[in-house]
Image 1 (cartoon, rainbow, N blue to C red):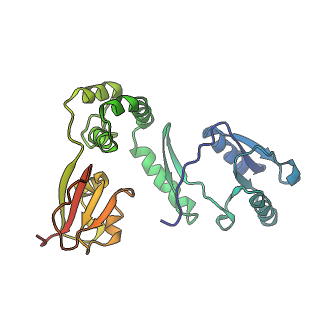
Image 2 (image 1 turned 90 degrees about the vertical axis):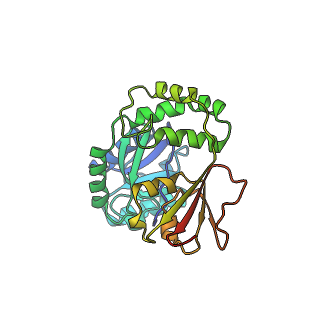
Image 3 (image 1 turned 180 degrees about the horizontal axis):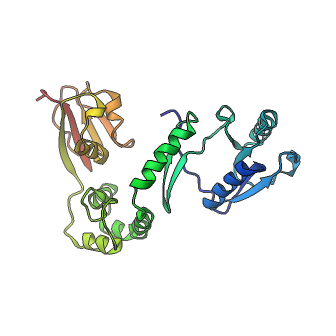
Length: 271
């Protein structure tokens, strides 16, 4: 990863947009779409006219190189993170290509290397991702308290949602779920399942590209990954970033007392 993708809540906050013309209009529309209030500044205004209550990010949509650089320097000196249109060398942050599904948004970033590549990927994902993802996210948020009353630990709640959102599950994001609240009610009415699982995954290859979809799903579910010391970091990176990694060394047995999904990851040929 060359850049760290983050999401900023700018609801109701003023965001500076310096410039005029189509590029500045596009950035102002982006700010408005995310719930912010674009504060438009013409390139020739004095820095003294900057609103003090503005959010700590700014867009500079100025075509001329010299003025664009000066605006970036001035805004940065005022403590703002700056994005300069079509000048990745002057940017503190990049604007990714965005797939918008309401409460669900996907960002495709290339670290400023190629906006055209990010755009091409976004177009593919737009056609692939269901339009109801935002409504599904809203239903999950709406029912979090109900689930927390039934599943009282983090591991139990994670297992509950993982089961519903898995391929073929009641809330499969790529399936048909006309009434997600009813599906959640039905799942809450079922007999509680244990939050702890012990799973084994035997690898025949150390190449991350050789992982099957099932193997990837197991890696993404795991809270703890007990792995052979020969497993390369590139393969372990396919797991959840917050999963705890623990080398097995000579001890092949799973340690006791670990709650959640514990995955033993080994090379084929190991005992």
